[in-house]
Length: 434
Ligand SMILES: *Cc1c(COP(=O)(O)O)cnc(C)c1O
Image (tube, rainbow, N blue to C red):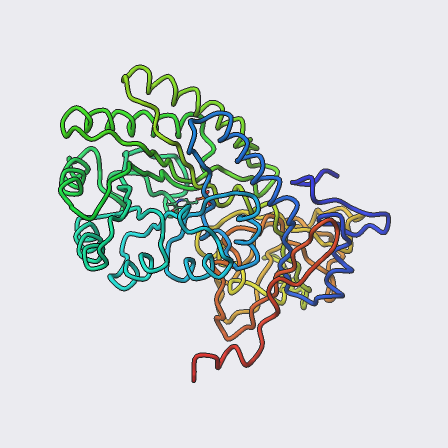
């Protein structure tokens, strides 16, 4: 049997292994539900992105990890050691990065509705760049920067109008997006002109993010062309030459054997080729180049372990396998019908051929982890269910719905597991009650 990712395997006892360790033993040691994160895998992805950016793009270019995929202090420390920049989307993410002593001058602050308080806090911490979304935000940045007597560096978020043919719910690059200013409508010109008039803003360049789970060839290349065309037009009409260009995140990651496998580093080589070619054709001096990989840094570094509590067969209909977690720790199937690979970790020598629905424990019939997934016919209470590729958008999207306690995160480095975030406790539920 082949597994989705090279950090997943099987040992002589027929147990699933992850990052070189027996998952049955990990579940015994740390309990379930349990998030595992393979630190070596995260570091390897960071190193690959870093070295690609260094060799392919002009000096000053940098990959920025998108913290919304997964964020906690220990992870920011790893990113810092790997020399990554980061993008943050909230004061909470900023707080965590700051707590990890991350160099905030390499931080890009996103969001389509930053409050004045958010803006003030980010300036207080010395955030490197604001990625401004709209006219009101430009006014607010100007006003708060003036009060603080600083000049704030800003990129403008634009919508290049590119449909990456991805899930509707995670598609943010089209013209009718809630994010950014559309190039097609002239609003991008308008916000650029306004920003250039601001005394306390230094406009550095432009940003876009076309969407997530991008698999199609040339989506980023087409976005790049639109963005560089716009930058060249602005140079000619407004006399401003962008020195930074940020193409966002979105490299697709396979969740099942059916998904295509793309190598982001190969894709970067092709993006770089287009970058050099288009800059040359437009006589545009090459700006420092940035991208914001989130999922492609952490997704396949993660796995979730659950204990099966019941197997309910409804004759003529379906079989439910219920586990001790669910939409509270992984809401992605409930939100987007996202595919996942499920495996019974203690039965890797048994064929996975019986189609079942894996259900969570929340009081919500939509609380499913996956439908029509093959598991062993012998699956029963006490078995250990592994869900693969849960390193991105699982813990970061988790809630304590139904007042379920949050699972811990165990980081595995060189086959040594370490508790990075402890399991939730009842006291956490009353932490805000004062
Ligand atoms: C979500 C998001 C990312 C990361 O996307 P991935 O698909 O996880 O790589 C990067 N930048 C912005 C602005 C985003 O909204």
